Image (cartoon, rainbow, N blue to C red; front, side, top):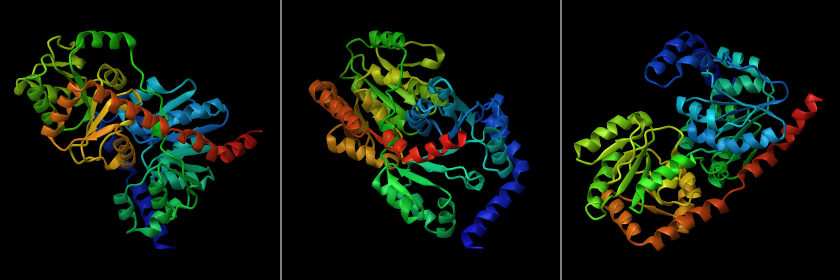
Length: 429
């Protein structure tokens, strides 16, 4: 037995032996708001929906971003009469999928990576093809699926340089896992090279699925109401913010509000349950604040509006022309700028965007995004864009044109998957 196989066997034995701890883990997560109390059994592989008749594709994305990126493939597979079960691991993603999945597609929570939970899941759903998004490489899920000779593809595959270097310390283990994958369809040439270097056998650069995701939806009535309350005043959105960034945003608002009377700053925290915490920060700093979760409307005199709701990013991206994309002034790797770019926003971001390096590089080179270094730089840039409307429109136009140009990954992926889909159809006849 190779060292890689030995480590995987040890992992399988350990997770099998510790399965009795899984209920405690799930209940702990439930107490912390990380699990749906009504669907805890799904984490043990117990299905809460009936498997539909016909060929079925299982797609898995870890959280909101990965699940949304899979939607173009869900639509394409449904158009080919494939049944769909899409799994994620977070409450927020499950809530979002309830509104975004098309008819005939089912959402379930992913089973924990425990052999008997995975077997229970596979026994019920009996997928004919499995698509994992980005870098969701759970060993037991891969091994159990592969052992049943179910084709596995990693789509929108992404592997950071840091993760690649870590895996290089266990070369036999990672190559043993990657050899179980039938095809890896990477986001970029760099990602493709990393997967190849670690031992994945069939790797192709297909492009980034996130460029193909339809523009975020919104309630047109709500949009009209918010735009009416903003009126002709300057407004901007700080989206997907994390702890440490809201202080910066509030500082910028205080400074700019002295010049721009009635300034509207909309904060959309990455985790909506932090809304109260952010409101307290605003109140303590003397900034007028309203919260969407409390049913409060935007103050007609301006101030900060905390959009601590789920599934409404499309609404707020349309309410203003400038979006600062958060998780980038703190060292967390950034958030997806494609969604606001599709809606014609001028994009601002911090320097920490390692999770979306390729996207930001394209946007920055095209003039569709501006990198911000600190609070003063953010304030100065916003002031410049509020003053120079033509420049703001030029940045927004460049952002929109860039993401439009980079689309096409979903078609590339479906072309690469066609041999596997053909085999599924032949097996059904």
